[in-house]
Image (cartoon, rainbow, N blue to C red; front, side):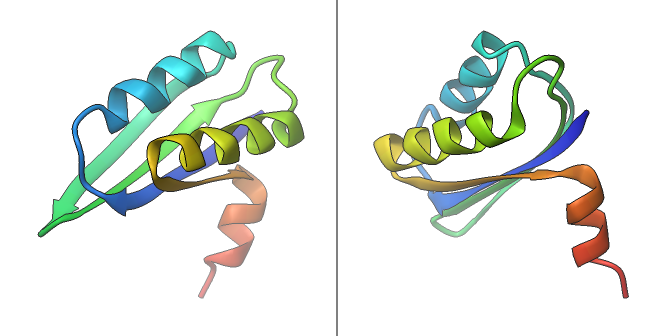
Length: 87
């Protein structure tokens, strides 16, 4: 199953490394990634194949990781993300 992972917060060193390492350890494969820094703010969006990872458990774990590193992380099933962003 594919998921869209978004990360937003104040820019600081190590955000990408911590998030992608966490995903790799969970067996999630990042298929595409885009990130930017707008002044002092970091924004990243990833398309990821969750493999055997349970998306609900992944969402909870990523929320905790976000709190730990000082950013907001959301995980949504690709279909839900697409439906929410249709014009």
